[in-house]
Amino acid sequence: MFKHIIVLVLCFMAYFVGNLDATIDENIAEFNKLAYCYKQMFEEGLIKDKTGRIVIFEDILINLYGTCRVKFEYENQKPVIQSSENNETFKLRSMYNDFKMVFIDEFVQIPDPRVLTKSGNKDCRLQKKMDIMKMI
Image (cartoon, rainbow, N blue to C red; front, side, top):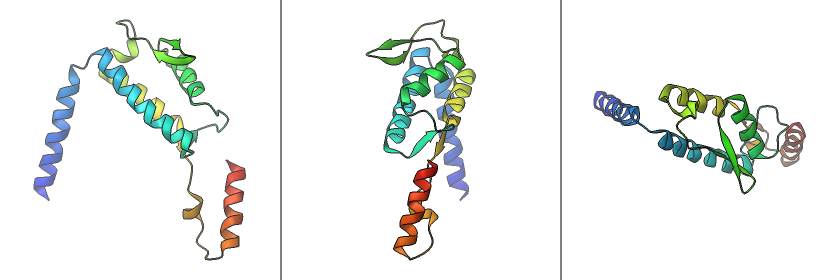
């Protein structure tokens, strides 16, 4: 058990040391990967925005970029973060980490209706699924 903890600490240490000197472009590339994963989950119906009103993922990004003062431009009608030295959010790792947390907090997980139903009655499960879908 102690060996596992040491290995875990060493992995975290390597991660932090490796990211201390990350450039703006590396931070933007990392965020784009995170946003791509969240977009896939959003489109598959696994997560939704907190308000439940926004149905297009790009609208969530545009609102977030405006709120956090992230400079972006449109390419093919999609918001793309500008890779420039004056994009303050991605300059410092601490500011970038705060921005990632704000982005992650924009979403909530949609509960799986199969987990919420305990009854063996198929009609009961179907009704609960329909009730849950109405709430969403």
